[in-house]
Length: 123
Image 1 (cartoon, one colour):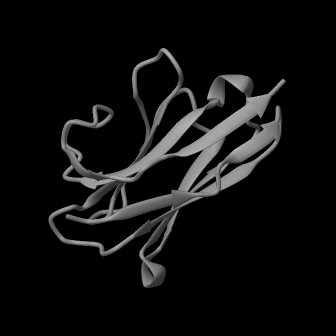
Image 2 (cartoon, one colour):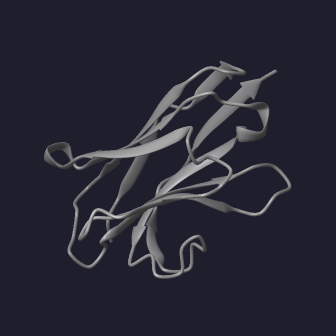
């Protein structure tokens, strides 16, 4: 199983930016989908971004489209999520995940998950 470790969360004011990192123990051909999810207190987990490493296609949820951007550093097995114009409703624990991703934005087809990193946006 691929090991994932997120970092980069923190407290930021509304309108600010953060960049989350997710270091993977390996990139495998079977786990070709990489995604970010988030879960706010009392809410269901939300799939917010998706990258297919085979064809480089991406998807973003409407809630983050135009503000959040995924990128990768393959040499370092690292996935990034750059988050701009953060709003209080973006407050959540953010997780990266890998798998086949066929069910995105559901997390059902993601087999490897990180431990999560907290993002808190103050108004």
